[in-house]
Amino acid sequence: MGKKLKRDSKGKSFSKGKSFSKGKSFSKGKSFPKGTIMVIAGVAAVAAIGGFFWYNSLIPANGTVPVFSPTTNVYVKALHSDQSGYIFASQSVRSGKKSIGGSTTDPTIDFVKGELATIHVINQDTQSGSKHNFNIDGFKVHTKDLNYFEAQSVTFIVDQTGSFSYYCTIHPEMKGTILVSEG
Image 1 (cartoon, rainbow, N blue to C red):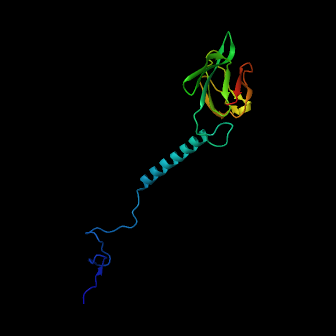
Image 2: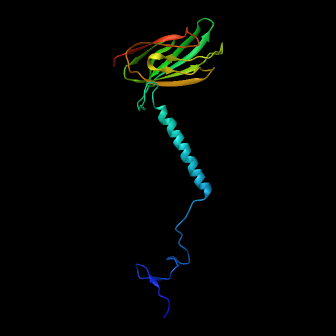
Image 3: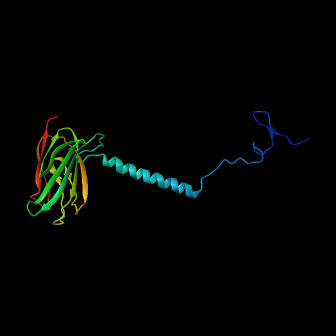
């Protein structure tokens, strides 16, 4: 008697060790080349790190969780001139459209309680080349010491009403007021 052949579910016969396809072996353990795995791992690591920083950038200075909301943007320049000395100058925009105050020296900045605010500070002190910073203690807003033409943005929740001072710790004469009204 000859060898017994096994049959598949459709009744076709095959012998042990042979594949269903014509002349090609069936491989269970296919793998990717090592270089491809390294590229995939690198892309995943960059995506994870980028996601971490993106997530943390959504957390306001005085908050603990991310806030997905449009912000009120205020642009503040740190300057020095022979006539005025060290000053903050503002060219501010609300919701990207409405000007609040034009260009003023040590401006009063108005907010409404409950809004999300971002203050963009840039050191444009060309005359003295001094460092500057920007602080609002009532909202836990503090920038680092900024060198010439260095900038930093700080986002915070305007969560209390009243009058708050902002200032530069390096030049105490650089100061202004933030007024927060009820919404």
